[in-house]
Image 1 (cartoon, rainbow over the protein chains, first blue to last red):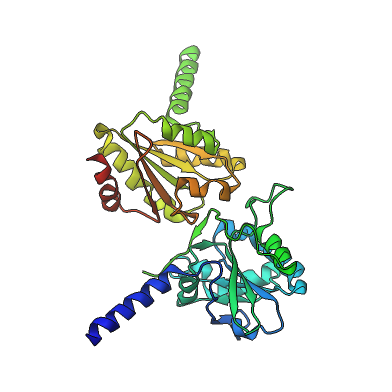
Image 2: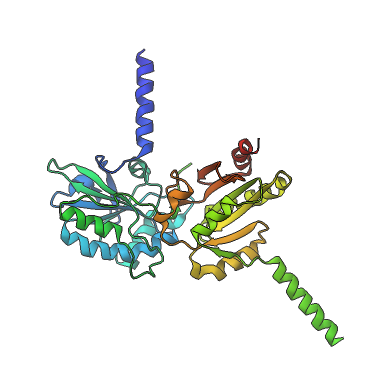
Length: 199
Length: 160
């Protein structure tokens, strides 16, 4: 019986880990290596209203198209209490550009003004249910110090960056939260590169 | 002689033009209308982009499927989600790869407006594949890559 129960528990955990988070869920904590070699945790962020976690990478053209916009997002929203934390979850064995050295170089070349963390085991991408790059998760910090998920999806609705009237989903979500409202939409979809999972 | 050469050149040029696809640009509504009015028994719509390595890698499996299952009324349509501004690049790619299945370019940059209409199961990552039966009412969706065997196993239940 115990065996059956533990098997059931194992399966449940497995399913939960794979399903990822939904809007309203608690955000999984992480402790990952930053490009400066230091470890960064979600729980390190104490004097913030929230954190913008963005799964991204070096090689994906759609992620590359968003790099300057992510830098601008951090410049604008960090001061409003919402700093950016970027995480690269890709398996570098198939895409060498996505290795740690590549991350250090890319961050330097593009002037990243936010931590760029390496999710080498891919456990954090799985815990969040990230599927593509770029894939944003806007988290809010509760009074208990725990973070919960307020928005999941695209950064805006104009990947090519040619539409001056684009809808800036993440920015709008932060504005909504800062005025005591819930983000609307709370989740969006966008075309992106599949996260390169280890096989 | 000169005229003959010119004629040959023209013929050659015309032949090349026939071989290369022009890659029609469609809105999402136009793509949906095609799905609703398709003539073939089963159409496999593969969402891809020239820059997407796993997409390009799985293309031969789709080309083989189109060839092997042609008599059963199966066709493949490669739906490029490259930007409209990259149309020439898509045409060039299609020519280089000598793709025989039809290739269209989906010009629908507001992704969130239509991804769920392809399938609520789709997160937006590519490659992704939607199989639609002639009636337009039965469909099957997969996000991720396919081998030839996986693809055959995926469509077979819809042919029965």
